[in-house]
Image (cartoon, rainbow, N blue to C red; front, side, top):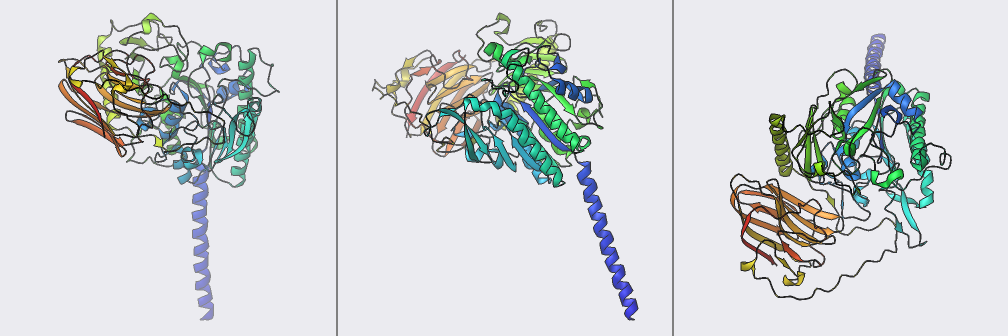
Length: 637
């Protein structure tokens, strides 16, 4: 009997051991089946700046090899400027949807909302180790930093390398180098020459540590390079054929080689996807210190192809066929759903995103990208739409940030280009293809309406501070001179009143009531009112049938809401108080949590149908509203 009991116990233990082994093998297979993910994100690199995309000036042997061993993506899109592009990449949304239309500055009130679910958070929940090394640029307050957005660790300068401040301790201009959420070092400008190398070393250490722990990892490496000012390491300075810019491109190429080399040495290459791309086009207005767009028209800051189409490479030995290329449409919004899919996860159904899972196409398993349409936003304005080979410019466009040249053909919208026939956007085919113009116009109207109704706010902090003590002196606002109060019954388009004509708005609720008549068949467009400028103020304006209410709380702190405008007589009520920010137009309405009241009375004039000086909202049109005021009144509480 004792022997029988012993045999039964032994069989039970053997079954337990077998079950454990099966579970362990299943987990091991699952881990090995999921790829490690590396995203190398360059700052301000042009489409024509690397060898695989035609550069004859910059030597990029490691990127050349990456293209030879992987896949070149020739229609991969980002956003026109830094913060917007990074928000798209991390959230899977067009930047205006998550309240990040432009660029964040140090000690700003706004940043990427901690409520957003980033690609790093998805991957960490799936068991990945996550690390961000480099330029963050989605807010520098503790609530907005990478460690609050799904990254286990962070090392880098949290914004652009031209945003330094004067340190109180030394009296010298510095940039903070952060380790997680603490300042590890204050770098003087020349200290930036170490940055690319230190970013690379940190990245390799993270890869090695993850390999040692036998854990899948996600490395996000957003380089400070190639943003102006340029600071290549002394080992690369003066070595290229293309000046300082070429020196730094070649150091970035060296960095890519170090990352790929580490993956190969650790025998991780065949289980790692590496994606290389840039955040926007080259800063061409900087001349030799900026890059080039190659065959594309435009540069950083615009929605021409040169401003947003990026040199992109995908590398995964043994999975991505070597030497392949695709002109399929994809973009930064697609990174989140694609990476999550490759990691075996699923996207939350209760969170609206714009990205698509393009993994089958990216890996060469499907010939066509699932994305056939791209929307080109500059700030909150949709300026162009692409579907297939056709791109329709909906508005006027510039050649890029800081470029004074204004080409006559870019002054207005309605231009149609075939990008497969002519990548340089020179020949307008709108007259020949009115049906395509109509189709793309409807696509643009649809996304504008949907996004206006489903936008989410940026993150907000009440009292932001710099990451280190600075000597910045705040300018004292000039006292407001009292003026004759406005007779609201006599207000008409084109009027301008001294700011003292209104009650003091400091820390006061604001209510704007207006009745506007829009002619049948027309879309409301133009400025209704504007009060203030680049420091604080508020404005009401319409863009192609959508009414916007913007309040500027500081130099780079905005809150903006919008709703569609019907035709006919419109009763408009816009309100701001300490708790709520709202806009009502007839039966249409929208509201959001208030980010605060004006902390001082606007210095600039109160204008009706105009904004002549510093714009309260840089996204506002310059022309007066194309309607007729029936009444208007601004009041406070």
